Image (cartoon, rainbow, N blue to C red; front, side):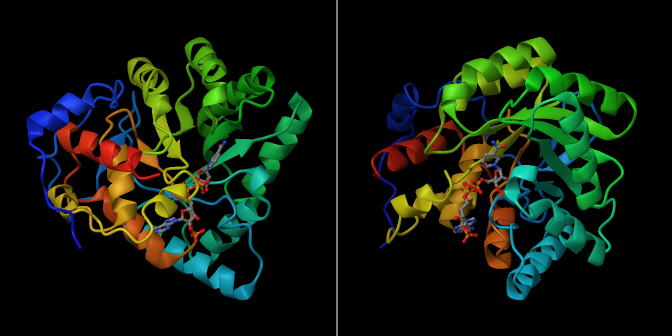
Length: 310
Ligand SMILES: NC(=O)c1ccc[n+]([C@@H]2O[C@H](COP(=O)([O-])OP(=O)(O)OC[C@H]3O[C@@H](n4cnc5c(N)ncnc54)[C@H](OP(=O)(O)O)[C@@H]3O)[C@@H](O)[C@H]2O)c1
């Protein structure tokens, strides 16, 4: 059932021209050690983040006992293997509270890189919401506070600078999930120079590589990738299809790793946050941050495969 390697590198590089956009890639031969987790530096700091984290939209908006047990197991797994980034938002229902409660039960204080968002209008409402997020996520200092979908960004960015100065957050950023907002995102990045950009980027939604990711690299802005599976759509596209044999050339053992390694091969990316609470999915996703990454030719081949997989 496995696809046979067929095209030559040259043929693939030719195909690369129109599709890889301006991504700067890591050579496939680096980071081949399966026991080492790929991590990326937050620009301008000595701090590194494991290149895979955990998204909690829907997946952690839960209250059933069984779901909480599953989420707890995932958080234990994440931290136990040295991964740390957990992304939430007040928009995600119970997610912040669930992360905070489970992290406390597991004694993970200080072991996670907690990222959440401000998602409201007005200075006072923003302050109240961020204070509540810190309470719910059981931290006095949030690692990363992002302006969710740029809502009232001009107001919140001032508060975020004050909070950073006061040590109430360590980094601030903006987030969005849709190409229609890229112009506004770009203007914000240039004007405000946030520490982090969180943006959608995947084999199904590669457009942020056109301008935003190169800009982030140029400005020294860390990048968190959301919707790495286009909210699961990528799995639908490959349903019933075997992983191509050449995925072994960059140590991808599953479709999830195939999709994530394509993202991580872009050097502008600091971390991707696939959403799940399932321990087996999380384990699968974390493995994408080990072993080799695809080189430009392989990456082009991945893009071509997915373009022709409706
Ligand atoms: N504007 C914003 O700031 C913004 C917008 C969107 C997303 N985000 C952040 O980004 C995170 C990720 O985005 P997302 O959750 O929308 O979409 P996603 O990560 O692209 O996809 C999530 C889907 O993939 C499935 N999945 C995860 N790992 C899998 C695996 N190893 N094998 C098979 N299926 C797998 C999940 O299944 P199960 O549900 O069954 O686990 C879920 O259906 C969010 O959770 C959130 O933290 C932020």
